[in-house]
Amino acid sequence: MNKQKEALKELVKQLHSGLSLEDAKRKFKAVLRNATPLEISQIEQELIAEGMQREEIQRLCDVHLAVFRDQLEKQELTLPPDHLITILMEEHTIMLQLANELTTIAQKIQQYGTSKKTSDHESRLQQISQAFRDSEKHYLREENVLFPLLEKHGITEPPTVMWKEHDTIRERKKHLTKSIDDVKTSGIENLQVHLAEDASALHDLLSNHFYKENNILFPTAVKVITESEWKQAQQDFDEIGYCSFTPTIKTDHVTEESAGSLLDSQGVLQFETGSLSAEEINSILNTLPVDISYVDKNNHVKYFSKPEDRIFIRTKSVLGRDVQLCHPQKSVHVVNSILHAFKAGKEDKAEFWINLNNRLIHIRFYAIRARNGEYLGTMEVTQDLTELRTLEGEKRLLDWAT
Image (cartoon, rainbow, N blue to C red):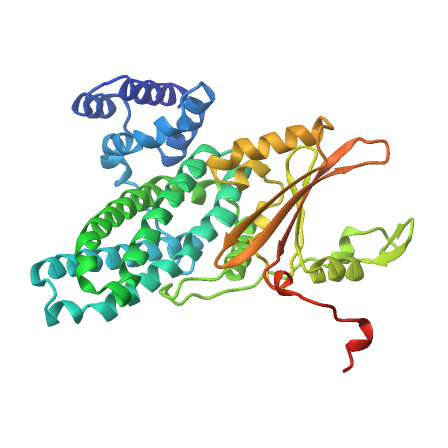
């Protein structure tokens, strides 16, 4: 098996060095006949470790797939209809059907121009646009549940590449939905210019991305993720929610562990300024009007609060995950800079604010230190300031009952 793996690594390197596609296919068939998706994933990780840039892996991933396509398609993935991977794959199928329909409508709009036949498509375009907006839950389930589970089993590079592709898809979807929404104000004429390009680009992105996930990422996940992890993942999937087009599924919720099991035999934590039970601690943290996440000194996610309306999704699958893997690649260098400054004692706080869905979101990172100054970890606090910004005058305690 090691010889086969080394041969596959050498083939991928030759592809990057300019080996023709036909020669690569010939060498692949002659040397390697049973490469698995897991081996391909491990090879990509080793190439990254040896210095190959992630951008290069992503850029030439389509070439790899062309070489491996015949072999991959021989590997049939048979799963129960309610398996989480089955759900993701069925969502892939539906999204590709929507993309195909979108392409067809774009062609008809180009053919008929501003006639009545064109305007008849406006309602369906809005429905397709909404479905693609709602598909965000699909990507969030992968990024916040599936990817962390793969990382726990040492599969780190393929999820990183897939997340980058998610962001590319998001940008294209954003452009598409804006073009469709603009029909309400600027008319169908403006849509003719952009829809065909957006539809074609989105279809190509989804088709290539879903092929990689269906044939490499998902079979790898099925191979390494345990039955107990899938059960917890189902609860996390349910918590994030499904798309409006997700096929009907059966859900069996996992019973959550009692918070008391995390405490000592008395079930009470003693603080300098008082004591709290497990239920009190959990309820207090979840009632605070902020999202809290805590990363330990080794950069592993150790805790997050669960207020009723979290601003950014967190699931139990991220516990133990490297915090760098919880952020898009384009911002990881900033996260590393903050952590380095905290650990070196140069900074104790970093704050940012963004506009998200017309809400002002305030994000603060705090260095958590022991009494002797030792760095223990980093706490992230996220708060929606939208309503607070509108406050004027004053409202006193005695005003509450009036």
